[in-house]
Amino acid sequence: MTKALEVENLTKEFKGLTAVDGISFAMEKGETVGLLGPNGAGKTTTIQMLLGVIKPDRGSIKIFNRDLEKKQSEILEKVNFSSTYISFPWRLTVRESLSVFAKLYNVKNWKEKANQLMAMLEIEHLKNKGFFKLSSGERTRVFLVKALLNDPALLLLDEPTASLDPDISEKIRKMILKIKKTRQNYYFIHLSQYGGGRGGLRQNNFLVKRKNCSSGNSQKSKRNSA
Ligand SMILES: Nc1ncnc2c1ncn2[C@@H]1O[C@H](COP(=O)(O)OP(=O)(O)OP(=O)(O)O)[C@@H](O)[C@H]1O
Ligand SMILES: [Mg+2]
Image (tube, rainbow, N blue to C red):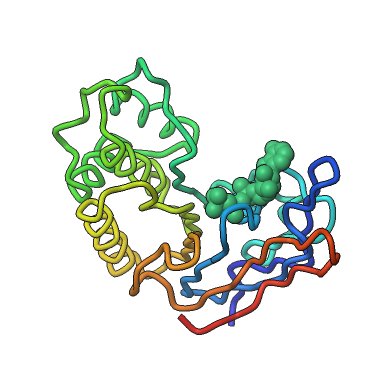
C-alpha cells in the first residue's frame, strides 16, 4: 500500500527537555489515525515537525514517499492543518483572512471554494465579520475552512474540538465525518488528549507517552485499535 506518512525515530529537544523522544509511526493511503497522549506528551510538537515549522533533532519524516527535509515546499502544497493554537489577524474579516491563505496556497476559484466550505460548516453569515468578533466555536469552523481550502491530501487536525462546548464539539465532529465521506482521497491525522476525540473520527490510534526524565525511559508510539 502507498504510505501517506512515515515517521522514524522522531526526536525534538528544547534546552534539556525531550519533548518528542524517538517516535515512529506510519499511515497507509486512505487511513485516518489519532495521535493520543496526555498534556505535554509532544503531540503539537510532532505536528509542527510534520508541517516543517520546527526541525527535528533526530529522525526522518516522509510524506507521500518523499523526504520532508528535501522536498518541503512541494510536499506542503498538499498538506494543511487546523489548530486552536493559531489565530488570524484580528482586524481582518473572515473573508479577507481566507483570501490571504488562498493566495499563499495558490488556490484557483478561491471565492467559490470558500463559499462552498463556509456553507458546509454553516458559517456563511460570518464572512464579513471581523475575526476578533467570533466566538471560539465559530473560529474553530473558520480554521477548518482554511484547512480545507487547498484540497489537502494530508490534513492534520490538532484537537479540532478542544475547549468547545459539547454541542459545538459534536457538531464539528459530525462535520469532520461528513468531510471524510465526501473527500475519500484525504488522509487525516487527528490529535487529541486521551479520551479527547469521540468515536468515529479515527481508524487507528498511536499513543505518545510523556518522557519519564528521571528513569530515562524511552518514549515509543504504540499502535492500538480505535
Ligand atoms: N517552543 C518550545 N520551547 C520549549 N519547550 C517547549 C516548546 N514547545 C513545547 N515545549 C514543551 O514540550 C513538551 C511537549 O509540548 P506539546 O505542546 O507538544 O505537548 P502536547 O502533547 O501537544 O500537549 P497538550 O495536550 O497540552 O496540547 C511540553 O513539556 C512543552 O512545555
Ligand atoms: Mg497540543
